[in-house]
Image 1 (cartoon, rainbow, N blue to C red):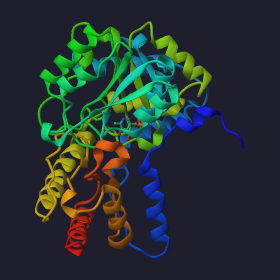
Image 2 (image 1 turned 45 degrees about the vertical axis):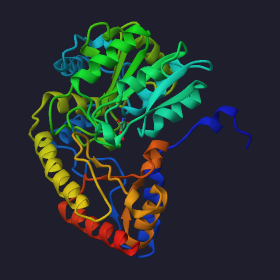
Image 3 (image 1 turned 90 degrees about the vertical axis):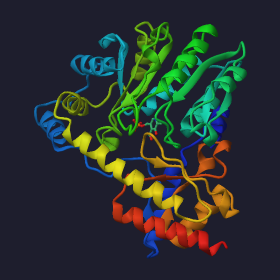
Length: 387
Ligand code: PLP
């Protein structure tokens, strides 16, 4: 079939491909530890599941408003305002997962001749969607030497008169890096000076082990030029429900709403009721999950640092370890392939998140202590086999 030219510019997300390869090895009898997919291993808290199931039985089985149910949008605005912003329901569009926010924002804002700056390594869909829009994707290197925070001076050097959009992500996938308040302030200064729009991906805001989350949208002059991407997938272990949202200037929300009408019509009605319970109901399961991740973070990072030839920074947020594996003498892809094919650990090559990810591996530690221990022994065996 002849495809439209634009399809050649659309990328993908390797995690799903690695999962398929790991499953194929399992079908042949190999036992694989899965550290590739970025999702909590916990089930959705039971009060949320009950709210979703009750909603279906109560008749929430019809189309709803394309922007999302009013009471959910109010609850989302109130929740986000804890970051120091002043939003109301007209600033919120509910979407099936946070991912569509990327898709819609880039379709709505970018075109050939524009430039958009994105973190490298970073979530692969950022670059994919910038490319798809026809704009030029400009990578901003995220370096280990800088604790995996972006370097504001380097950012300033990449801004041109064509730069329209800047994407930031804190806490970050795949590095676990977290921007500090002073970073956010300097980024905001640049955004105002150069009239940039910022898409701030804050989906891991609650999964933070040190310090506080700072939203750029709360800084002077920023709410009118920021789109916050957030959702329920990570915080409430709701990846399969598909529930997320964008928070944006009130005059931009109708634009994103029009993309909702033209694509999915609305987010599942019963799922939105579950989302309302997630935000307004008890939060103890969320707290317990984050504490479990904190313990596993120490386990995996200390374990990796104990392996000769590997070093790993302690991530401050999200649930990924991003070890430096240059001591192996292999490329990221070679190491990830060897680890899966010969040692039964599914991980993702750092280069799946951009060229700057060379020399690194992403391991999701949203997994049991037992599996993490097993993975560590296998990574060690893999390193020893290379000596
Ligand atoms: N942003 C980042 C940085 C992510 O890692 C993910 C998921 O892995 C998403 C956004 C999208 O999540 P979802 O579409 O499940 O809300």
